[in-house]
Image 1 (cartoon, rainbow, N blue to C red):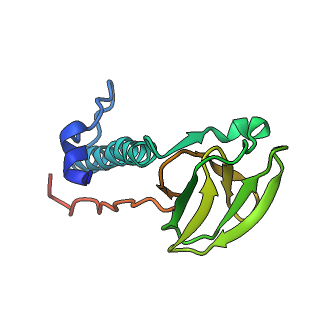
Image 2: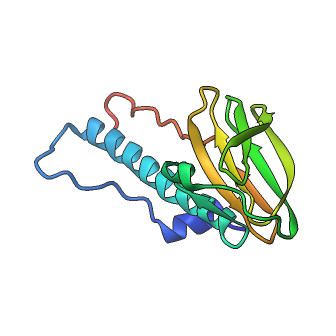
Length: 162
């Protein structure tokens, strides 16, 4: 199983250098810590999401939704859609013409196990129908995270602490 420690070894935390920016030491320490955490979260979030999809399902950019459609049914598989966000997600199956068919609403902090067939296309949206994820089922079961990003909060250093 991939862990945050593995991600830390792959993407060491470091603040980017800002030429010409010379804030006070307290501000610099705070900005450096914030940038480190943001860079780490971006790099590892994308990597973890990619690892979940490799060999299990193919994720497409939502801008391609108009060209997505389900192919003839292949092997029976199951895709688990995990929603760790505080907002619900709508799960649509795309038929052979590419039309959305509402299958379920995934409640916040829940998981939906959806039987499907390899080659079938799925779209996950928010409550206002904006596409967030597009997935095509492969020949193996998959777990797809469809919401929720852990964001670390860093308090500014106390006055007089550098």
